[in-house]
Length: 327
Ligand code: PBG
Image (cartoon, rainbow, N blue to C red; front, side, top):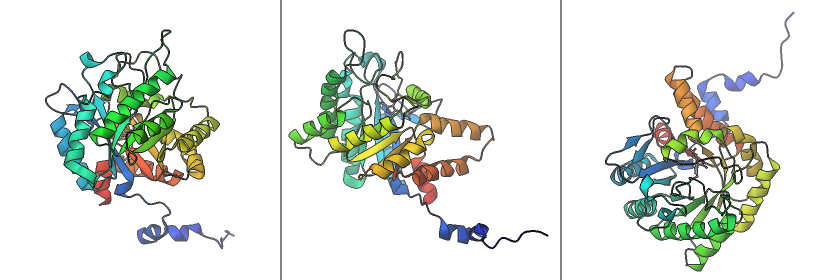
């Protein structure tokens, strides 16, 4: 005789309408932020081969693409600058130069888009240094935390003056949020916010991004980015950033760190973001290109998982496309 269960969870899965009714997690365009790259010294958008569909923009193509993304309903734009190799130096001078590629682009987008979107900037030196590290080096060749803070402060003020609404310090220097907050306030930028890369891991999945920004990094970032083995360390980093005045805290990467997204969502009283990084984008893209997975379904599933884990904001290279799907 076969058993006949009384409790049947499958009842709530019977039809699309029923599944829609009981879905616990939602995904909306306003929650998606599009990272964008703007490069010096190119005449037309340059494809990034390890990130099919993503390009380095010229200043002009960036303006058009930014307007399209905003029209599709994305919640914001995160801008990265790609200076030409010849302009890089040990201090990353291009980062706080008002005429550096990132600050020029921010000024232009701030003028074009005004307060119609949330304009964010990567606040980090690695794209601008000739050695490719996120900070300046001491005599022994190590990343010098406190000297780097001075550089972040200069870069932050340049980005705030250029019109960024949110600054994204991503270098994992100790005290970066406090230093930037104090400098912004002293200069009257009390409304410029900080989206802190609070828990950022030394991840192999950043690989394609290094091509995207033409990184010249030798070695690795393990003396400042976190060891993937650690969880408590991430919670400590998040608590510090909250105490230092972060307006939003972010976990990065996203998909291999969903446990941290959940943990952070439980202790944070500010919005929690997660960054679905380049390698996550490229993995899904590559498998889909080979016909091994259903691309669109995999994208939606990955983003839904990040939302379910507890992120209310997701940085993803699919932000515009998915915003258009969601309508
Ligand atoms: C640092 C920065 C990186 C990314 C965002 N900001 C690179 C790194 O830490 O090595 C990675 C983003 C991605 O992989 O999509 N400026």
